[in-house]
Length: 178
Picture 1 (cartoon, rainbow, N blue to C red):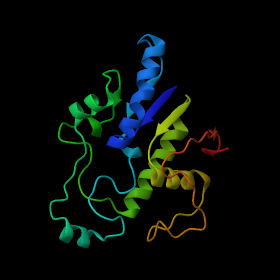
Picture 2 (cartoon, rainbow, N blue to C red; picture 1 turned 120 degrees about the horizontal axis):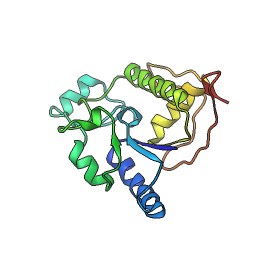
Picture 3 (cartoon, rainbow, N blue to C red; picture 1 turned 30 degrees about the vertical axis):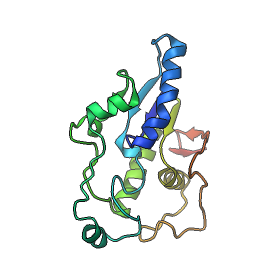
């Protein structure tokens, strides 16, 4: 089994007690892998301002919007465990995010990458991620159309905001949710 955690502070703080309980109950010897995975971060990445601002509006309003997220040392300190694995981006000392807000097209491609990644796993997987990201990921997994121009333009909203627990079965032969 494995637990994949977004490297955004809110998700790391959500994962921390789960990881602590896992280590405590196993005496520190667990066969569950815990990994911080940058691709499961929230829609847009790390940025200032409203999601609906254009990049030009964002740069004008927040000229120093170069948030990079936590670096390797801070991530390990915040998660509270040294047995956690980090993906390539999370290994960076100066922060896991490239800076600025990602475009909707880049975001949807990232959701598709994660969907492909999930289809390759041979073990049960828990995601500790974010509402908008999980909404789009579920749409990608189920084939519900996502409008690149307006992510909010949809007849289907998966109510995962705030907190959600979902158990999904993945059909490996069809590479989608069962």
